[in-house]
Amino acid sequence: MGNDLLTKKILVVDNSKVITKIIQNFLAESGFEPGNIFRAETKNQAMMMLGLEKFDLITSAIHLSDSNGIDFLKEVRNNGDDKHRNTPFLIISADSKEDYLDDLKEFSGCAFLSKPFNQKQIKEWVYKALNCLEETPEEETGPSKVSQGKTEIEVPEKIKELFSKGIIEAMEQYMADASPTKLKEDWELNGFFSSWVDLMDSENRVQLNLIINFP
Image (cartoon, rainbow, N blue to C red; front, side, top):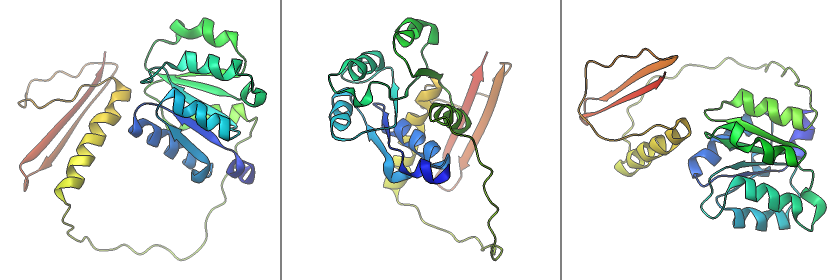
C-alpha cells in the first residue's frame, strides 16, 4: 500500500496557508508523497489545477475568499469534464455538519470533518476513501542516535514575527482569538477540555499565555 500512496495526487483547498500546510503535513505523515500534495487558496485557483491534473483526493474548507466549499464541490461534480465526478471529496470546517448534510448527500464520495482535527482523523478518512488497509511500518535498523549538546542559536526578529503570526493563524481552526492583554491570575478552567500554556522568554521580555477552554 505504501508504494500506491506515493503515486496518489491530492488537492488541498483553504484560504489559510497555515491550514493547508497543516493538512499537507498530516497527509505526508500518513504516507503520501509531499510533492504530490498540491495546495490552492481559492476556488478559481483550484478549478484551474483540476483542469490541468487528475487528482485522487480533494479537501476543501467551507469558507473560501471567492466562493464556498459546497459551491466548489457542486462545480467539480457538475463540470463537463468527468475525470473528477467521483473523486473523494472532504469538507473540513468548524461549522456545524448538520448545515451541510443535504448538500453532501446529493453527491457520492463526500465526507465532512469537523475542526479541530488531527492527523489520525485525516489518515482514517483518506485510507477509507482509497480502500486502503493500514500497514505496520517496519522498524528501522541502524546506529543509535547520539544526543547532541544544546547550542545557543540567535533567531532573527523576522523569523520570530512570522512564527508568532503563524501560530495565531493556525489557532483559527480552533475558533480562538489571540490579542495582547494583561495577565490575569484568576482564570477558571472548568470546561470539557481545558489547557493553559505559559511560554516565557525572559531575555526578550515576552510572555504568551495560551488558554483553550471548551465548555
